[in-house]
Length: 97
Image (tube, rainbow, N blue to C red; front, side, top):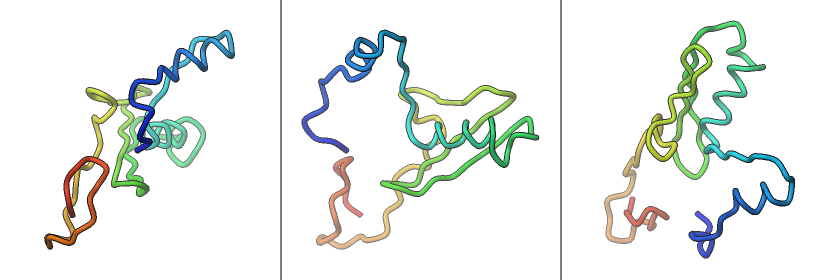
């Protein structure tokens, strides 16, 4: 969602600046793991969380393991078309609706 950043190696830049290993996850997976770790899911073995932001996302945690899937999209809910007209807003993914 941030044009111009496609080839910027942000993980390497942050790692170099902090002199620590760095990993990134998407917002929905991070929110799900946070709720599982210290939030409302802390007393459960499994958690499913839906997030609403730039799209409809989700995170799934089973026994302390985040089901991220390929490219961290394992539990994303997908593209939901709500406007089928030719004037529908263009999504950052390139689809309308």
